[in-house]
Length: 150
Image 1 (spheres, rainbow, N blue to C red):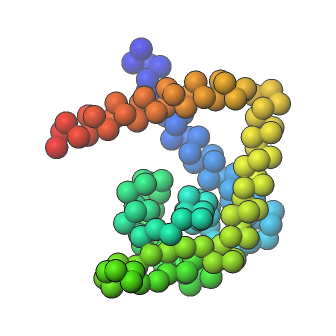
Image 2 (cartoon, rainbow, N blue to C red):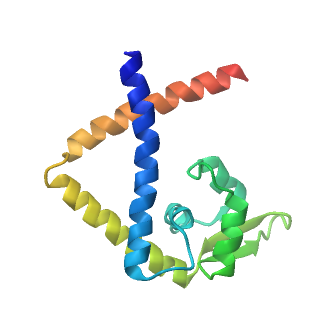
């Protein structure tokens, strides 16, 4: 069991890095050079929401990256709009600009192409759901370990 567990951990990490490579290849194909793959993933995860930088960080999708720096670059390059909260002037919220919405629509098309291709011989929707159930179980298990340690 331990060997399978360790292979799974390594595979999860490799898959995340490979997924970022897929996003980078799509950015290159589209000729987009003012945003990187991690920043594109941040935009995709914000989507139609309006979030604080803290909320983005808590979502935890940005391992190895500085969310504040990436948000600053996304604002500078016109992908995000950053506004002070009307309720708490110390807090800022971010939302996608038109440029950000346009890019996320293109990335959503990539996701659809990927899902269609995966469905044509790699895995069924049911198999992916089973995999998601196992991965969610691992996440809950690791969360319990971390929370117990505190």
